[in-house]
Image (cartoon, rainbow, N blue to C red; front, side, top):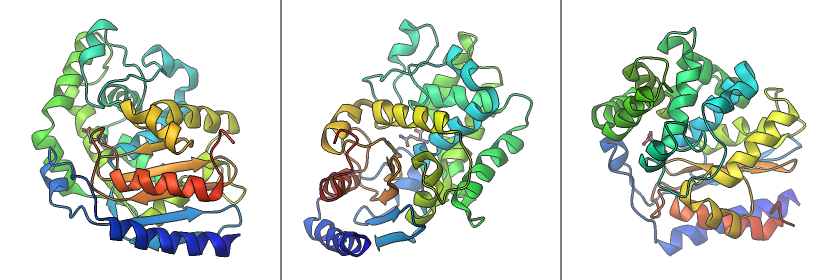
Length: 305
Ligand code: GLN
């Protein structure tokens, strides 16, 4: 099985590179706009401890919104159910950075993966902690989950977003006006921009997802119940307004980031990371989604059978 899968991954890398239909990199964060779109990497962590790879699987990239999964795991570990008083768990059907629903729903974001919801999660992470301590909690979680300390924050990306992140700044102030932000908005956005600027390779990210996939060799970071719930949120909200399309095409819980990363969970079977920086219209990796679709088809790992 692993041999067949390795052969498939090697072929998939060649196939994706031959297609050349990469999508466009996110340039609203200027530092991300400098990344070449024509790149692809994939890593699949298996229950026996092996990590199969193809393409640029060892190349670090900006995980961006994939970090929201790890921040959520930290906060659920700390305050559990109380989080849902501040943020919902329904898909939004709007862009990841939309402010629209926030007014209608009186400052309670639809889910923890759209930017407004992720800002609330990061704000919660800041309770009783300085921005530096909160950040170090997320980074430590990711390092422990991946069992790899060589994971760092790219400060140039964080700065680049801080200088241009007017929408997130607006969202944070808007949340604050509804009383759903406890910290000064610049503390919350500053922590959030740094959390998003964590750099990881596909190999590191696939390893970090093993606890969410419930793989037997994974470090114990989450109870099975929390892992199940994070998977449910990833399936319904992980690709923003493209979540239905992703469930239809791939059938697996996943979280995307505008750096072109994707963490995909095949519960009990594998933790998968794909990177291809060119994005589709929803802000999700274009070739990454196609590769995920082909992988799910080949393995039969869709949660829908
Ligand atoms: N840091 C980015 C932002 O807040 C993350 C968005 C994303 O990856 N979808 O805009």
